[in-house]
Image (cartoon, rainbow, N blue to C red; front, side, top):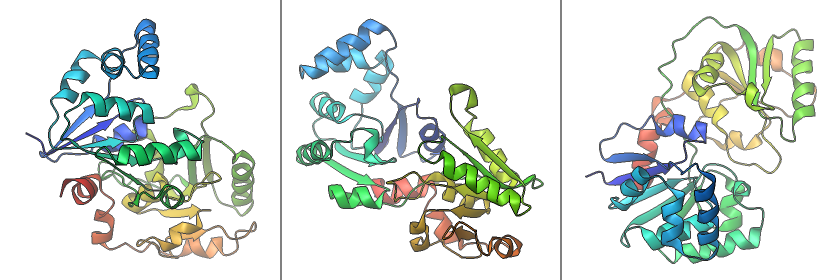
Length: 306
């Protein structure tokens, strides 16, 4: 019997890509497959609001998912997959002796922008066998929850190919559209080749595998974080695993154990002073032991299994 169950939502594609890299026999990965018919969705919402949790559970998940969840023993890791009311529902339905961990892989604003509400729910659930952790320093401070380093999967599946562009970015514009456009224009003005893909609709999505291929074909991966985010995104870890340079506006990367100014350029001025010398300098391979800390099997084992 696996000692740890990892639960994730398949609709969050980046989560699925990383979680599916787990190959430890002590860990069982369970996708939370939801019922898709409209009636089930409505009844689930009604019963959840009324705190009739067993009925809400029945109408939320497919038969196979409910069976898998009820069979869990030992420890469970919820990988940023549920609203707070759903954690209450899980607590009412699942085995009472489960050790329940929740990892927030995005800023907590994904689930609620009401700080007081989030603080209340974390306090309530913490008294009911839940433990919470986050990759984001600001959320850790604000909500008093454990800070863990971010995580990725081993990307050795991608072979090294020829470099096709100097700088590569992919992501939703959010509140950074103007910043991204200005950055790309500045880089091109300095003679660099760029590939910036802004995901503005479903037709713009690319697969995680395609993203990794494009990253591998680039000399430097661009990481521009949205306002209010302090933790490292996946892009620095893509760069770390693929041995690519990183251009970022996230100054907190300077505190990372893999930080090297020859590998990581932190944007400190609009003119990108010294970017030409940075790109000419050879990449320095990071210590293997440091890279392993961010690999999903090692990360889950160190933080939740042992």
